[in-house]
Length: 255
Image 1 (tube, rainbow, N blue to C red):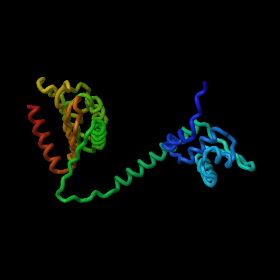
Image 2 (image 1 turned 60 degrees about the vertical axis):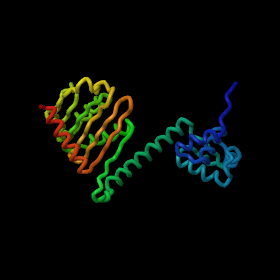
Image 3 (image 1 turned 30 degrees about the horizontal axis):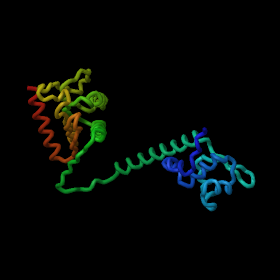
Image 4 (image 1 turned 180 degrees about the horizontal axis):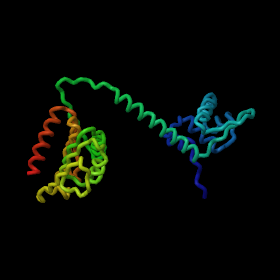
């Protein structure tokens, strides 16, 4: 027994998510059922108001989803569904790229409001958000990175990212394990924590500190079981505190 053909209304919602209006979706679906239909026939098949059918067909034509005959009355043919979806997806990707470019330009040119003595410290929750901000921070380094990291699930990606930074960026690393060869500009100090800390196994607190260019700092703490939390700031007091922490920890660990 053949499966029933879905109604135009049931297909309209997913098509709307691809950039079509409700009327455009209904008319396109009606055309798939009756290729070569006239505007009047499409009005009857789709339920779209008669006065709206021609404007809808014009927009579908501009989106290259419909072709029109030179006959009288005019008849319309739909682009095959596979081709139509590909066209809509490319349009979405193009719009997204253009939006990203414009938004990035606006963000880069925006003036940051003065906040007096207020020093903002941002909390970041969730592994994906922390990972995204951490690697964005590292890839933006221009002169220096000082990093302490004692956790496993991002270790390989962290190492790859640190090794990929520009040759002008000095990198100082303190960690529990590092076997990858490094260039001269990268200094690595390996110090395994006491077994009682359980850091290497992820059974208790783990994390790290990142200071970039002496202007930005991010602190990550947590565990694999409970997830991670991070603090990020460009505040001078925050940077100064964790720079002092870095200096103290690095001096202690190298003695």
